Amino acid sequence: MLTRWLDIYLHFSAWLFSLKRKLADTSVGFFAIIFYTGALIFLEIIFLIISLPFFILIPPKKLQLEQSVEKVSAYTKRRRVGLTTLLSGGGILLIKFVLLALVPALLIGAAQLFADTQSWLFTTPSNYTYDTSTIEITGGVAQLIDTGTTTSGTGTNPGFDSGSTGWTFKSWLDGGKVTGHYHSTGGNPGGYIDVAMADAQNKTMAGFWYEPFTTTVSSPDTATVSFDWASLAASLPGTPTDYEVYVFVDTSNANPTLGQQVWSSGQISGTTGWTNTGAIDITSKVTTARTYYLKVVAYLKSPASPSGTYSATVGFDNIQVAWSKTTHIYASNSPSIYPNTSLSAPKIVSWNSFVEA
Image 1 (cartoon, rainbow, N blue to C red):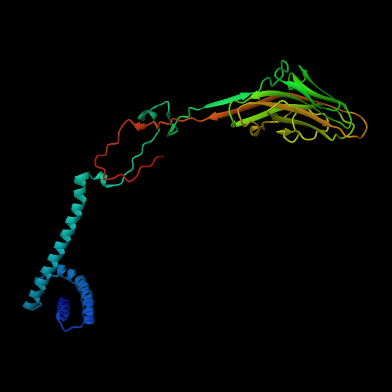
Image 2 (cartoon, rainbow, N blue to C red):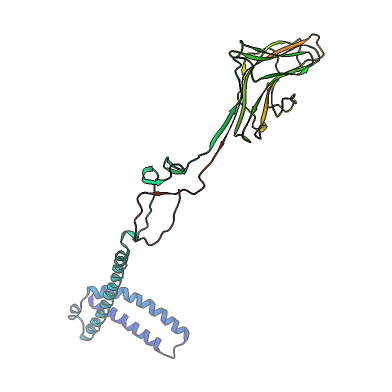
């Protein structure tokens, strides 16, 4: 068996030698050279695959009993060359790997060969130095302090518990008899003001109370008015053409203009209990810093028929106007913050990125 494998090996070697001689022949054409070259490369790869285990596993002494001296000598030489090439090539590769691993580690340190991330977490304020008047650390975040202020204002005497001071009554459409009164009891609770409209047929009656209020900023963030109202008395022989409560915010105390109201109750058909309007948004009316006038209006328009006079009384209580605006101010001098303990990494090869969270 061994003899057969050795014969195959030697014959294969002879074929390669013959192929090389053909390549050396100057009379061989160009396309033949390309063919022989491809065949030689292919056969050399096959020969390498066959030769390496053959050289390693079969020493020359094992062949001496079965082969001629010439064959053994040729095999020995090829075996020596093949093993020398294998060991020297493997040794060179091993040395390269060792140098690639050791040299950078000796020059810059093994730990720095690997990518790393350094994070500065703002969980402990005492770990950092910064100006506490402009910077704060809260919730794991360092941020500028808002040193702005909130400016706000309200109306006066919303509850009428000790009179109607600050409020003024004005008759608007006096088709019958329109009056305004203050009452110390019967409100929601305590005192209240009213608009009483009486003795009219086919007439329009309206009256209002107004209060001045001043905003000291332009376009406040919020501006609202809320109040309680009730139809305390209503003598309505038929369905009135219009019986409503309106709210206006104007720049003067003159009579308001229908269609410019900020709120209306809708048609009232009789007496009611005290009802709260909720917060009515009036920001669109207070666009500049100045004095405005809040007006609460009772309005009754009676038809021509059926016969009889129309009367109604509307009460108002807890009329509160309020506005506010927050001005945000942050330090503009780019205040600094830095950790008390510096990052020490003298053998860093490069910084890849810096991300501010």
